[in-house]
Image (cartoon, rainbow, N blue to C red; front, top):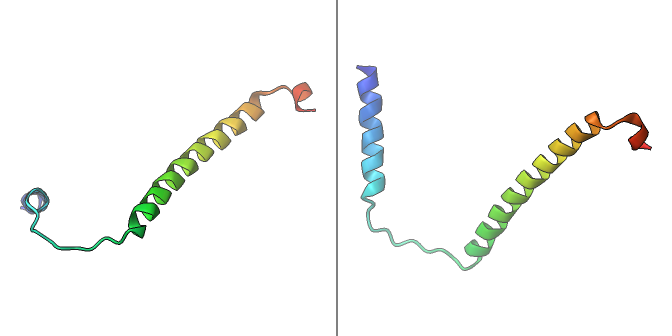
Length: 68
């Protein structure tokens, strides 16, 4: 019976998401800039993490002579 409750809850949430009510919300002009900054920062953090990870792996496989 518990599995049925989870399925019915998910179905209800999906239906609410598909048929939203009309809402009159205000988004100020600065929100677009903040959103773009957050997205760019997210991608910059991912690129930095991958770069650091691969440089760390590469340094472990380099010979000791190349490290000078």
